[in-house]
Image (tube, rainbow, N blue to C red; front, side, top):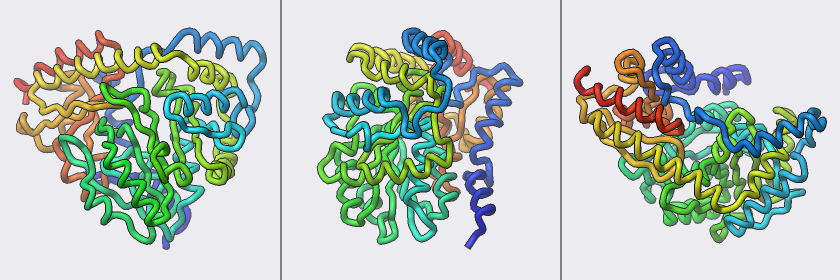
Length: 398
């Protein structure tokens, strides 16, 4: 068995298909974008702020003295807003006092949930490709990370493979829906199968739903709302993606009181408390009308379509996402089968940065995605038009 420091080192170096890029490739691509003046479509953060009304409430909270520790589980007004949100959109009834926990972004909620329930004798099942922090946190827990592969164009799991991946040791199935990095929204059939298998194997479901309001022409379906799911599901989301305030790091987890209590116990030794002046402002934001939520999805869909058209013009095969910030593009039609190598060339070659999908996979799983790149479209429209112009020159330069 590995020692704690070895597990920590392994968790901090999530291996990818090309031998150890892991989380460091994000830094590498960002540095390349900075040094070349490239448009950075590698990282998933917006290049403009969210609503001024929310920012005004943070300013006022600072002036009013909301600058010390918030309660460990979050201020009451935000927890109550989260409970109203879950009821309003999905019909989920959660007790804001016992069944909601405010966290330092969704990443901390994921980390605390995995560390609360996974041990070295367990397996944690994710879909592959997977958001990079999943692999790192599973390794830190000492559990075994198992996966079910997703493939283009639809990125939906094969149900027989999903069933075969569950074992007597499966403690957690970690779901990301809408999915990063593929942009897929899982079908009702897939969600129902996950619930069936979780019940059969007495596994917990951790559902990362940070892109819940960023779907295109399809409504988000939280897995906790399906029959047989609520009692074993921790639902996670955050303000960063919905309101375009990723730097504020306000997230939350909701679910049965006994599960949330265990997550809270871990969280108190991670950050204890999160962003006091931001919390009330985000609570106000969650109560905004349907037109606000429809507007952010509509605006983002326009951005998706602009970038997708540019990628198609450049010669990529484009897999149009149903949600999230990201579009996947296959470089194989351009004669390129090593997307990681291409990602390193793109900033200097055409002034655009992207991330290879292979780094979101274990080495074996990376083989099915060797020619895929992930591009973020959560940028201003003029930036995306400029990126598309630059991409249009790629075919002639390869």
